[in-house]
Amino acid sequence: MKSRNSSLIKRSVLAGLVAVASALAMAGEANAPATEFSLTSLAGPSVALSQFKGNVVLVNFWATWCGPCQQEMPLLDQMYKKYKPAGFTLLGVNVDKEVPAVKDLLARKPVSFPVLLDPENAVSRAYKVADMPSSVIIDRKGNVRYIHRGYRPGDENEYQDRIRQLIRE
Image (cartoon, one colour):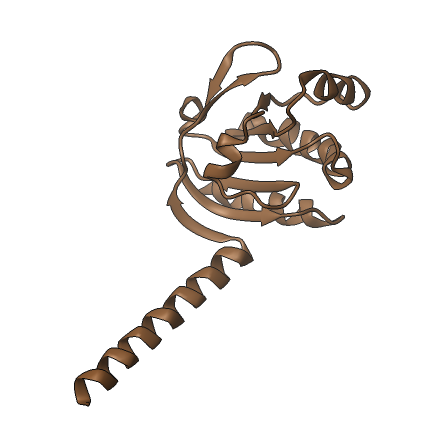
C-alpha cells in the first residue's frame, strides 16, 4: 500500500510540475535553444536563423489574412529600425501558401525587415505557433527568452522592454 501511495504522490508531483512549466510557457517565458531554420526570403535568397547568432532576434509569425498582424507590422518595422544598430534583427515569417498575396500586402504596407516564406508551416510547427501573430524573442546566445501570442495595441511596449534588456546582456 505504501508503494502505491508513493507512486501516486510522485505522479501528482510530476503532473504539478508539468502544469507549472506549461503555465510559464503560456505566459511567455522560455529558456531553451531556438530551433534552427532556413527559409527562402521574399527578396530571393535563403535566410538561416544561425546567420544572426550574436544578435537579439525577434521572429514574428504572421499571415496576410490576420488583421492584428497587419496592425502590428508598422510597429515592428519601427522597432527594427530603432534597435538594428544595437545588434537587433527581426525576421517576419509569413505562413501563407500563396506568395502573390504576401507581395500584394507588402506593396501596400512595406516593411524593411526580412520577410521569410513558410508556406508548408514547417517552422511554424517547430515553434508550436497556434495564434497569429506570434513572436519569439531569441537572445544573443541563440536561446528563446520570450514568447508572445496574439497582438493587442500596447504589446509592442513589452517587446521593446524585452529587446532592450537582452541587448544590454
